[in-house]
Image (cartoon, rainbow, N blue to C red; front, side, top):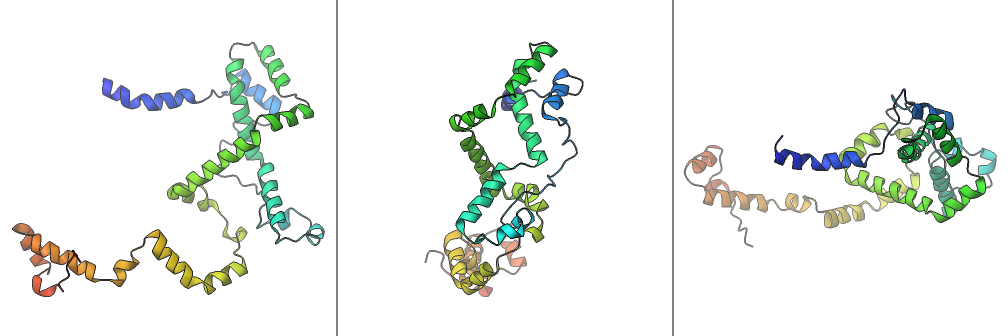
Length: 252
């Protein structure tokens, strides 16, 4: 392998070294993970997408009893914030497994030099914190802020990467679980001229060129005047000629 190829492969090797170790089937750590968390490390081996639903503003009726909803204003901002909080604080079994994996991988380097019984003692000691100690950790280690920052970064990246967002999220989305509010549809139809104007003025569409076909004529005029030799013969063959192009000055 040449030095050039080694330099090109260096970022990939560095990225691999950043990854934390994972227990493999047959190791004591693999059995220890199942003993502590009550779920197998490879439980998600054939899971392509999480099939368990969480509470959202579109399906809260499935999670909150209708008698309770009768006494709550579901259109209020406080109720929507409560639904978001319930969504972020509850985990599906798949999400819980991923969180347990990340936690266990962080202590894997500590277990490498210990005997099986010492590993079991250390892991049970770390995961047998009292409830008061766990609350204290949440208040002092910025755990919640870090979690929100990671979620925000992942979602913003997904929105910027349209292909990833389409194939990782929207491809599995159920349209029946995301109804459009009737009031929002009425607002869109009522103010469609405003939306259309904002799209054309802020995003930068081709609407200006569609409404001004003279730009196309100007480009063809420039091409006809600048071409010579074989290129001139080619554009003449396809019908780009001076007598068939309405003149338009690009400098205007």
